[in-house]
Image (tube, rainbow, N blue to C red):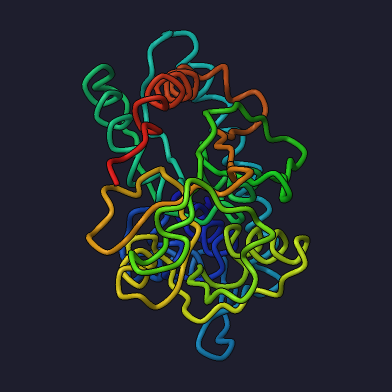
Length: 305
């Protein structure tokens, strides 16, 4: 008989694309995931993973088993949802994916509240970029995602995924203290030509928004420095190396040498909670969404500059 834990490991590799990423999502070590898949290979008598450069790829037999695993895990999820719904109390494991600034600025308080109010609930957080987390929910790799979109880049809504608005996160232009924009009450987008920009890498929602917005205003942005994390972007601004557009959520107080200037109109990104259709019947999902929405006003409060 096939072991569900081993099938779950194979399914995670299929969804996340590598043994290391699957291990991180499952809370295991890469060695433990490899051992689970090795045992599954011995059980089935089939080779499931093959070397592909520095990574691995699933064989045809593995892809078949991953599909079977998806169906079995969906059955297990429905059973767990029904049991939890009958009890009416949030319980069991709840996997949450959130983009970095939400994981830093919103989720700690939410997770602490859930742990205090519902000791039978085992909520587990992973940092995941928003353009990836929606697909992870759709595939059943995580139970709940906190993602965001911008006015010109709407969040994709795949079939089988529901969502609820958490709130709107305002964004400000951050400039060095000696910059000509410092001290201005507002800066129009038409004035942003010729600036040296500090931004997240291509493929990230914030980067795509910046390029599309400035090009719509007639400017080709010169991105001179790229970094994944907002604190790094702020540090580069503090060093006088350029300007950046940074959302307020999770930003924290600004260091000396950095000045906040509002853009006109003010950029806004909207945060969402996403889950698979029907999962809202699960008390753990409903309670987590409630906590996210109730804690949002405090998390979104303007940090001291």
